[in-house]
Image 1 (cartoon, rainbow, N blue to C red):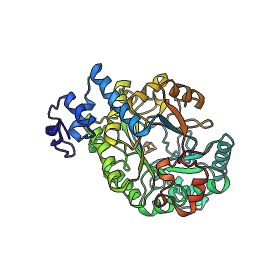
Image 2: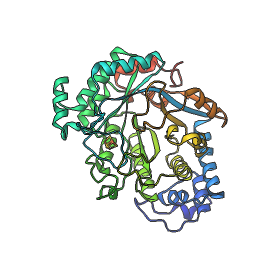
Image 3: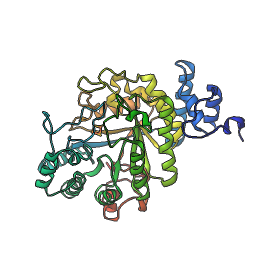
Image 4: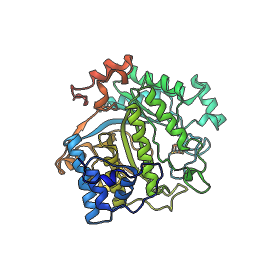
Length: 405
Ligand code: SF4
């Protein structure tokens, strides 16, 4: 029974303002496994020092209880199928217009060459990342697609995913932006897991001068619709939030709860990434301040306490040499690590070597294990894997769902 019954009666309404809930009360409620919005709002406001340490301790304790000492990663290659994109997110260094230097759509031969080179190095995941619907804005992309025999980027992506399956040993994991039901159905047959960052549930970020003011694919309702449709279709799905792009702390909490709510309805969220904004010299938000370690870690810790057994990831290459300390905030996954391709989204931030990642994880008393792009929890759930991919996925797994060595 609870000793904090009063706390449990706090409203769980989206966007509810913090009513001055004391941190200690919020932490006690979290310790009992109950984290409503207002409790999360109080926790994320932990002060540096004792409160912050207590928050991290609660989050890493819950990780130990639910995940043991295992920290996972996926050995992948990164395939930037096209960097043309119809959106202009203020923090993006990946996207290009067709006439900009570096604008590029990969040919089928280039895609297969990267996948096969990755397979040689023992990779198991082909992560397709690409701009969102460039053909809707750029006639040049429509010409390119026409030459490739497609009308849409998503249809070209489906063909490339199929070819990766046929011509390499890798599993595609597609991350192409918004998808409708038919896109998801088509891709489900060739990509056993998929992803779409929710990023934020803040409508404010669409206003002039904000991060998403010229990004037609970033209204939160559209992104939630894709994630929900993926749930209806039972697709193991990766999502996450991007912090430090102008959202408030409560808006961060709202985004975490939106993902939690979808997972409670459909059971398909395999992973939530808490990605920290990094300023780059060539982006509109180049002068915007970055979240520091404290801000990133407190958000990760609250994500663990809110999301409980959902896997929580932080990208190690976005926190410089300090990244192992993020383990103290309760994460249990480092995401995809590539021994071959650079991080095209954050090209100035190299991934750590896998051996170094293993050593630094072990130094925290934790054990690094390789997973597939499909998380272990989903590998043996028949309804979550297309029949045509089931054997392939399971042949690549051990009995516990981890990647076979
Ligand atoms: S973050 Fe994604 S959607 Fe936004 S501009 Fe970059 S590639 Fe396009």
